[in-house]
Every structure is written in C-alpha cells, then in structure tokens.
Image (cartoon, rainbow, N blue to C red; front, side, top):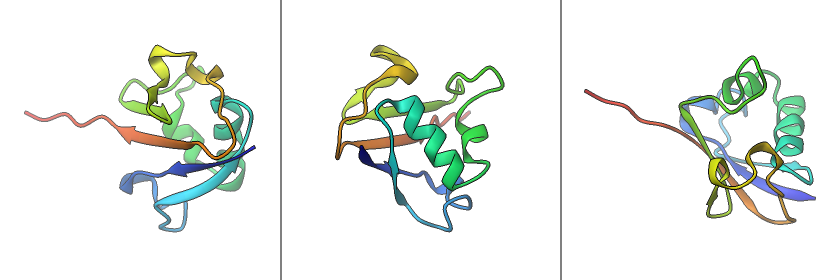
Length: 91
C-alpha cells in the first residue's frame, strides 16, 4: 500500500532534499523498512539498535502518535500520511 512520509529537515540529506517521499507497507514497520531500502541509512536515524523508535523521534500515522497505538505494528492504510518528527529540547 502506498503512503506518503513527511521527512524532517535534519533527515532530508538521506532523501535527496525531499520533504515528502512515497513508501509502501501494511504496517509502520514495513513502511520504515522500505524507506530504509530506498534511502539507505535513514532507518538507523529513526530506529535504535534494538529496532525500536528512538526516544527523541515521534512518529505519527495520520493523526495518531504510534507510541499510543500499536507502535511499529500500527497499520498504514493506503494513502495515509506518516510524519517523522524529531523532538525538540531546549534549555
């Protein structure tokens, strides 16, 4: 299933500067695997060494924060927009 993925500025070096790219998959896990296949290295910036979403990265499928739904197993229906948003900290 084709979905669109919004890429934050800090990760656009992996997507040739594109702010939004297409990917495919039935779940968020599948979409991120395809994204990393198409844009090598981006997956390591989103997922940690154990395969979980990094602590300071927020991911939304549509309007849903995946941490409060099914995590990486959140369904990614056809046409949905996935947003990858790095957390902002300041001091």
